[in-house]
Length: 227
Image (cartoon, rainbow, N blue to C red; front, side):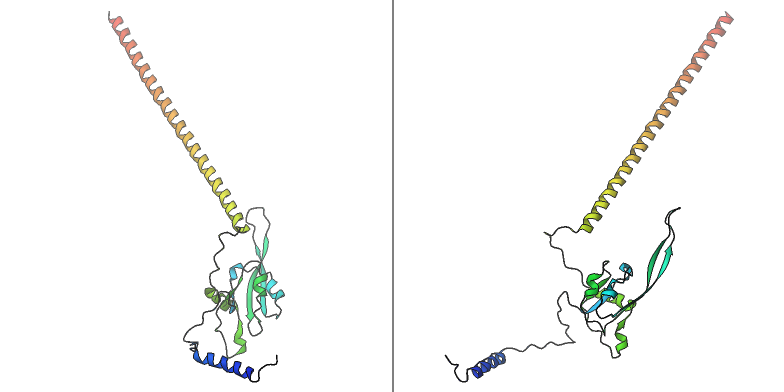
């Protein structure tokens, strides 16, 4: 069946009429901040304490917008006779957001959870050079990182938590065993002290009795001599 002439125009006018009857909603930005999804990709934050300068994020970045500088330091041996260790110390960590395409690869490949997404997006600059955020600025973004979502109560416990709990239980059992051994040693020491005190008391009583017996014998001997 051929289309009715003017049906397309009628449909378009119907859409226009429906839209005209609806109440318009205007986002009053920047007076009213938008409600962003929990996993919005605004800016990348750096948790410097977790960074080991492994360079994975810089190597995997498709835009090469991550700049990392570091140096090595020698850590003395923890125990006598041990070996010295060398560790990387972070000198510079910067991200050029004028080149970043917000793919999130750097956050995904980081094995130590040093990079996080923040929903903050208001960091436009008039100078493009200001879009290169150094590690101090990246650290400030950490305060805007939202809390991770709650875990599913039916999910399997993470291996890291299970291993940490096992280690903690083992340490707690070891401490309880040591405390029990100390209590037993203390009780044995107290029992030994009581036994020694009792022996000293018995020896003192025996010595006193012997002295009384000797004195009685001397008195009897003196009486016999007088008779």
